[in-house]
Image (tube, rainbow, N blue to C red; front, side, top):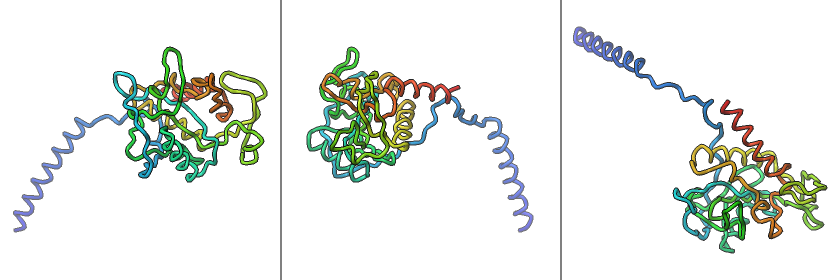
Length: 242
C-alpha cells in the first residue's frame, strides 16, 4: 500500500510541476492601471417604488448617453430628500439620477441609466443638438443652489459670485459637499471607461443648455464654472494616464 501511495504521490508531483511550468510560460501580464482612468464603481442605490416615464433610447447610432447634464435640486441633501426628489420628478413625467450629501446616487430599479431616456433638461440646446435629454443623462445633486431670502437659512457652506462668469449667474450659492464633488467626478471617470459614447465635452451644466430659460444650475454650486470643471476633469485624466 505504501508503494502505491508513493507512486501516486510521485505522479501528482510531476503533474503539478508541468502545470506550474506551463502557467509561468503563458502567464497573462498584470493589468496596467496606469493606462486607464482610476475610479471606484459609484455607490448607486436602485429604488423599487419609483418609475420614470421612459422616452426611448438616446438619439445616436449606439443608443447610449453621450454625456451628463449637471443640476441642483433646491432641496435638502439627506437620502430621504434625494428619494423625495425622485418621486417628485416621476410625478411630473420627468426623471434622472439624484445624489445625496454623501455622494450616493439613486435611480429607479428598472431604469438603464446609460440607455433609457427620461426628460430632465427641458427645452435645451448645445451646438447643433437640441432637446438635450435625448443626448445626455441627468444628475440632480441635492443642494439649495442659488440662494434667496427663503432658502439661505437652510444652506451650509456658501460662496458669493459678484459677477457674471461663463455659466454662473451672480449670487450666493450653496456649494456641493466635498463628498458630492468627489462622487460627481468619480461617476464621470467611470462613464468614460465603461461607456464608449461618453465625452467630457458633453459634461454640461443645465444653465449652459437652458440658460435662455433662466436656469441657473449648477451655477456657483460647483465652486467653479463648467468650463473650469471640464478642464479640471481633463487635467485629472491626463495625470492618471500619464
